[in-house]
Length: 115
Image 1 (tube, one colour):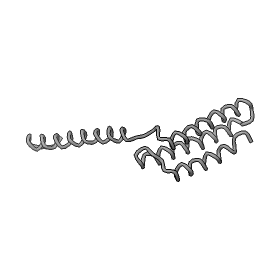
Image 2: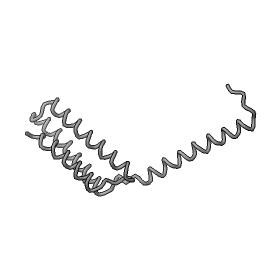
Image 3: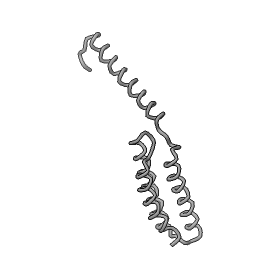
Image 4: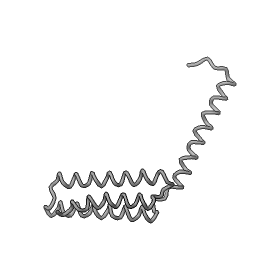
C-alpha cells in the first residue's frame, strides 16, 4: 500500500476513527431531532393515507383504470417525498406555509379520485 511510518499510520487511523465516531454521533442526534409525529406532518400524512385508501377503493370498484390509479399513487408518493424533504430541513417539522402547499397538492390529487 503506502510506505507510512508506524506513528504516522497511528495518527491517520486515530483521525479516521474520530471522524467515523463523530459522524455516527451526528446521525444519532439528527435521528433524535426528527419529529415524525409533529401535528402538521401528522395531518398531511393522514390525508395521504386516506387518499391511498380512496384510490384503492375506486380501483376496486372499477371507477379508476389501473393506469389512473398508478398515476395517482405516483403523485401521492411525490407529495410524501416532498413532505419528508421539507421536514428534514427544519428539524422534523413543517411550517404552516409548507403544510398549505402540501394540502394544495393533495387537493389536486383528491379531485382526480372518483371523477
